[in-house]
Image (cartoon, rainbow, N blue to C red; front, side, top):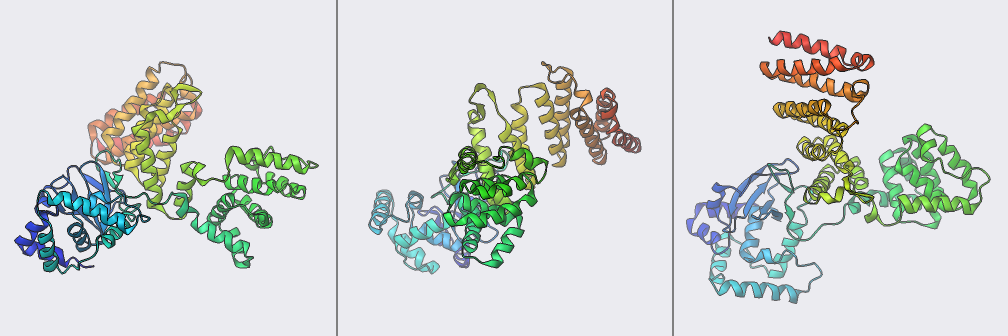
Length: 508
């Protein structure tokens, strides 16, 4: 659809006033913007075109889709164009009350819901004559409420992952208006399920192509994990042999388990050959039964590993399994949005990080992998958000220093040089007054080297940014850290230290 109706509203004050009241599409409110600064997680552009009297805002995205954001932190796509969104808000003035209607709901239920809402509206002001006038002037057909509700549902389902809205300052995601989409594992496994079906059909081309492609191989093995069939043993052997090319992956272990579950002792030579692929596989598959083991012993090993690491329910898998596979398939926005919502949930409930065996202690590993995953996706703002919380929650001096220099590196790479300098100052405080004995030998190990290197790299960045006073101050701090390093650690930093000193002399 075009945005012809929007053009008409902008040309005709009477029509614009009708759209604003009683239908809550007020062009004049566009000048005020949203209640807070926002941006799309995908990085796409947003244009404010209208607002309503509740503080909600209508944005137009790059492809013309209209994103509605309310003032309470929820957002969703309501049309593929402004005209389509206008047709919706005029045809369904109570549309926000219908966002949870299901595709399984009957026509009678939908009509009853719409009638109840519109009767309540009519108690305060008219909508029927106004709707008829707007529809006629804008060229909208008289669509049934059932059709409009169906269009609304279809539009809302398009919100994720491309149109997820973020608070621009904090980086947290808006809640989703309307129905939840499919779980992440469904789109991630789709290609693997298709390949698994082709393998089962005996497609020779698929047997070659899937085995040769590390991503397709991994996803197909995951599909086989959740759709197990007795006739799969030969194709599982085939995938297992080829997965050794990737060394000790979770999928290699999975393939070995799926083969072992068949209890065929004739597979023991294959499993032992796989175990000998390299040092990592020898460690990762060290408990494979030795030659001469019985079928029961082989199955027992496979069942125990299956129960502890795999299973048959995709919803039991760690979210990182699916975000990694999504990213590997190029589903970048899908992975990013899932990771953002995972980080949001930790911010809202940090008790999720508590160790069950030591309730007063926190396990911050989830924040580590979130920061790394965001960095690999090129999303430095979210990586910084995860790493800031990670650094703030560390309990030992070693962990504070390690998380702090990583935070400084991310801040430097994001161009936030003063913040990076502050983070390194906190690292030096941890080194000077640790409060525990975890940093007794920091001068002799890689941690000391990494901290010194980050000091010099930030000094170079400050010099390039034309900040001479801060450059000199940080160089002095860097040299002080460098001076405490042992011989081997210092040797790894010496060339960078000399190059940084030369650069600072140029600036001076």
